[in-house]
Length: 259
Image 1: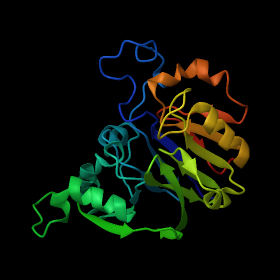
Image 2 (image 1 turned 90 degrees about the vertical axis):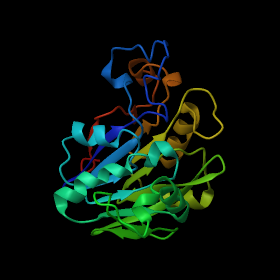
Image 3 (image 1 turned 135 degrees about the vertical axis):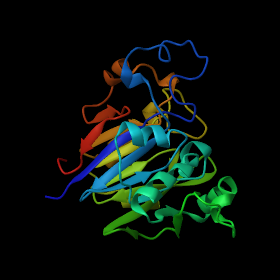
């Protein structure tokens, strides 16, 4: 059986955890699972590495996981905490002597061209990131040999892409999934879903809302990500979760062949 695994590069909200200058018990926690970089995930298939979102902590995450090759980047949406680290693909360009394959919606394309205008300009300054931008829509697309199915969700009023790879689904920064998109979530074995905090939020699922969706999809295993310090401590939240649900933490590795 070929390798199919994932590692949570970051599981925190846009501010990360601890939050700058915050003295709450979560931000002051000595439990490493309560220290969260900005949300991102890397999945590996047949020894090829693919990253979903390159936030401000992308460089640190790549160094921590000792990643020496990266085959593609998929973007969920254009918010800063999900794209800000793209400049650091330069290191992979140098190592592989090739451009990075990037998959993004038209809205993300606009965001990338605004944030990284120098990458897309006519004049290519020496040493800038080299990318091959692939525009994605609602249809499934190929990343290498693998088929990826986009899941359209809403982040308040902003469209966001979730992704399904085989029986694995990754959804972050969402607070609404339409009935049509729920049809793409049948027979999911492993689901990653955002859950910002215990109380309701305008643009993210709360803990109860995320658990309700997990119960509806009924995966064998679900992991919560994009966690705020307002969620509470990892050890305490873990005690109140259903048996098939875990709160993810930075560096957590999952074997997707095992589910």
